[in-house]
Every structure is written in structure tokens, then in C-alpha cells.
Length: 237
Image (tube, rainbow, N blue to C red; front, side, top):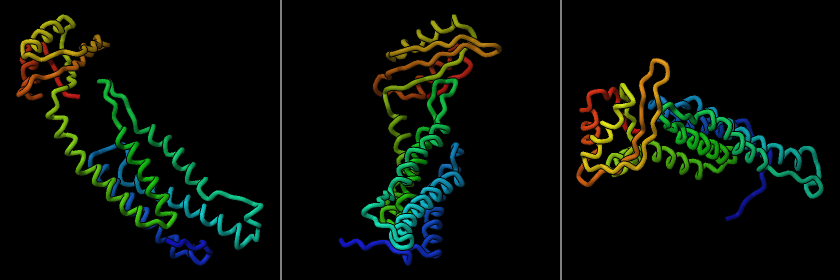
């Protein structure tokens, strides 16, 4: 494959608009799914990240052309790397991604997929900004498939896994022993118990790491635990 040198003719207003529009479209398509699921970063966030990355790559290309064709500087003595702006986008997106990752009071880590999606969206924007539309389209489709299709596959796998973590909230700390006996009575193996005592007006709670026997579903075990009188809340995490 032969590559030609980029010139000012390749960076017309129409071409810049096309790249930014393509970035907004691809980022928006990904953001629609995240917004529908009420994630921390939704439609506008993904669109802005992708457009910003594309604009950064267009700027890199523009400066490269300006140095060689307009300013008349010798590229052999005045060296520049058009990928530097793109590299800073990859690093900088980590700050936005970190803001979407949360650790809940139930020790759940949420936002990892959103952060990874923002990073992938930025990479897609860089491809669009560089004019590599083929890679951007393939990347956009892969990201959407990962969010839409693989999320259902992940849920199916987790729902049929023998290992499960349960959050159980109860009225008194002494109720823990009764809950443990109830779990063992279902032939369930307990790997770990993380107990949190009551704070203020709250109730004590525990996170159980369990291994279920064959032919017993998550719902069956959760129903058995819910039969304990003082259990207030039970949730799979």
C-alpha cells in the first residue's frame, strides 16, 4: 500500500467538518447505549470525548503540514512528531475515566466498563481525526457489540456461575450465626465473610463469598437466606 504526503488540500474545512461529524456520530452511537442504562457517562460525554480526540488529531496533522508547506521550515532540522497530541489524549482520558469509577458502600466497584468505554472512544476519535475511517468504523462496531451483546452474555455467565457474592443486611449482629447455619444447611461452601457493624441508624451487614453446589441456583440460596426472620435485605453483588 502506498501512502501520500498530507497537504493543505487534504485539510479543507469540509474535510475537518466530515471528521468531526463522523466522530460525533460514532461517539454518540456508543453513548446512547450507556445513557439508556443510566451510566455515569452518557450520550453527550461520549460524543465530546470522541470529537475532542478527533480534533486533537486534526490539529496534529495541521501543524505537521504548516511546518513543512507554509512556514517553510526544514523538516530535517526542525523535527516534530504528530503523534504527541494523540499520546496526551490517551493519557489525559484517564482523569475522566477515574472519575467514573466508584466503590459503593457494599464494596462494589462500578464504572470500570464506562471508563474503558471512554478510553476506547478516545482511541476511535484519534483514528477518525487521522482520516483512518476504516479502523474507526470497525472499532465503533466492536465497541457497540461489546456494550450491547456481550453485556447480556456476561449476565448469563454470572447468573450460572457457582461462585457468588451476596450482600445481606440484618437487624442484629447476633443474627449472623443463624444466617451462616442457614447457608451451610443448603450445602453451600462459605469462602469468606466480611462483616460491617451498624453505623448510626443503619443495620449491620455482611458480604458472603459462596460456592454453590451443582443444580442449585442463586435464587434458591437467596430465598433460603431470606427465610431467616431478622434478614432485611439480600442482594447479589
